Amino acid sequence: MRRTAGEIAKAVGAHVVGDERAEINGVASIASAQSGDLVFVEDEKHFDSALRSKAAAVIAGSFAAQAQSRKPLIVSAHPRLAFAQAAKLLSESHERKPEIHSSAVVLPSAVVAETAVIDPWTFVGEKATVGERTWIGAGCVVGSGVVIGEDCKIYPRVIVYPGTRIGDRAIVHAGAVLGADGFGYVRNRPSADRTGEGARPHPAIAYEKFPQIGTLVIEEDVEIGANTTIDRGALETTRIGRGTKIDNLVHIGHNCQIGENVIIAAQAGFSGSIVIEDNVVIGGQVGVGEHARIQEGVLLGGQAGVLPKKVLRGKGVAFWGTPAKPLREYLQSLAALARLGRKD
Picture 1 (cartoon, rainbow, N blue to C red):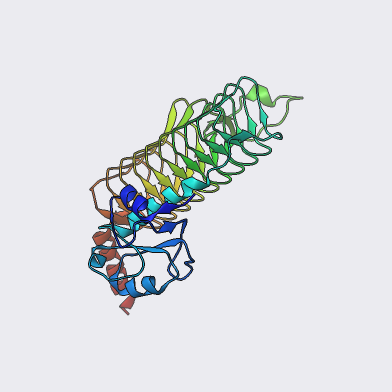
Picture 2 (tube, rainbow, N blue to C red):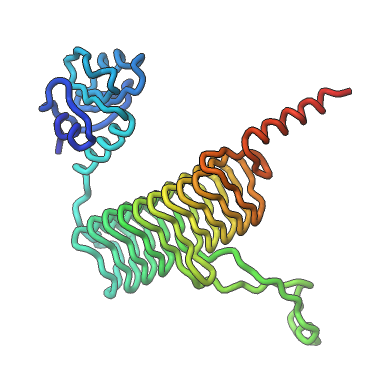
């Protein structure tokens, strides 16, 4: 199935200069574009390269409104956003045929929508629910009582522990583990009568596992990267808010509350009971200690470290370093250290 330039422009809130009937079937970079592809240009200096490419049409900024071109131009105030929306629209024509593969194991009490796709070697447990048009990739395990909403994409070998809830339009990439036990233990010194004659010897300090019987709730439009792990709550709920995007190899501990439209880059790690408010941006390899709170709109630079119980506040304020400080303060500290290093 193809889309015309006019259909794409209407869907992304843009307008066409040129032939609205031109057919488009994919997206590409300017360098790799082939016949039928759509490319985009944010900077006018790359506009000529886009026009010379093999692409069928170009999404460009307002600078292209008066341009003369044989290619259709889809003019948008936000060409990168329009390109992303167009790519999603074009991908809808490549949806999988609804079916439950013969090698999949779906227990009788599970409810799988007729329009869902269950790939080979997948397991769906007791009383689990899979929503309309959702795809579960090969080798996934969907535990008992799991609820997966509509229009979700669950890539191969994802493990969803019992009781986890995943909202509509979620994307979970390969190897993610959702709803595993949190890392919670209580230290215990064994009593003297447990170490008497004939008793099994114990170490000086032992650890008892704290109950991990809470749940994990992932709200609508969340994307979770490959090999990311998110723990269930200990006694309550770990929650990932609507529209949040999480990169690969991220760990989120038990009882964390991640707000809406949060961005978390790769290899970040979060201890238990952390609160991340809405619209926070967190760079790669950031570490956050237990019970810390990152307030709305804060920006955390790569490899920043937030101490336990610390509160970071200030919408639009960037923090850096360990312990994390406002960027200006952090740079002043680096400058002071550099001056000390220059002294004899």
